[in-house]
Length: 401
Image 1 (cartoon, rainbow, N blue to C red):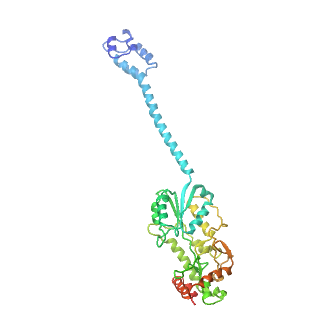
Image 2: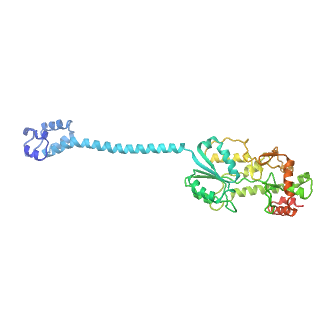
Image 3: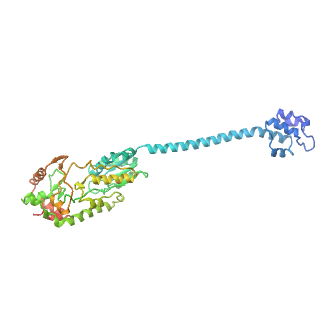
């Protein structure tokens, strides 16, 4: 093959500068060793032995093509490889970095929590916020109590508050009467949110004759009525007799069974669309009600009960808990534990000072305030209220006169 033919094939000047003696001019146009040396000098590196073997049957066109491949393709492949690998590695590194950074931020950011229920929820809000481990991880919102919630507030909570929560603590509410059910609130939570349910705290062991005013008793502005004082007033009995030991002892077993059955019933029932209770108190009450005062009123537990519930909440969340029984969030109202109650159940604790609206009062003042109300109603109204309460509280039969 002539030099002109090589030029027509697009050979470079370095290729056309090969002399006729550098090429084997036989019919096969094979390479000679000088040709390989020239090729190696052109591409500036030795030709691999496998490629040497291939050149035994190559013509000038193949030489030129291989020369281009040897000079250009490695450089192009290195560029492509570096670009591709760099992008992949950079993208993977950036993705891993963002994931790690996002996880770290997720761990570091304070999560949003809310608590909903009766007055117990307000007390637990205060106790949990005073726990360093809980306060460090959660911003706890106290929603309005279920007995004070309005329609507009409930709608706002379901639409704007609950979907943003990471944790929802609540007492299950059926929705009967004026209270708002918790089932729609659960539906408003996002799937990743955790919910913990704690029991409604109610016990009448310490104050078996102190209860809400009946619907038939209008005009009472306090929280609880002492029906034992009412009997003393309407039957014209001395207070000692109204609070005598015989008043309760025949009913002590019934009162204990009724209270524990009522507490466990509240803990085990499941409202429509709701879930079972996570944190219960019945066993604690049965175990400790004689040794410790566990309730100030029938609906206001002491710090022993509240700390039990708060500790269980922190345990569910894997957080440390430091107990504080000195603080009493629900100690603004303290009604007396009658002597007949102490004797009937063998209660061992010292009584607390009486309080009404966070103000300490004497027992005589407590009785006087009750009698002032009983003076404003007819005895028949009192007897009607007694009969209503005695339907499922048989010990109230002792209140008749």
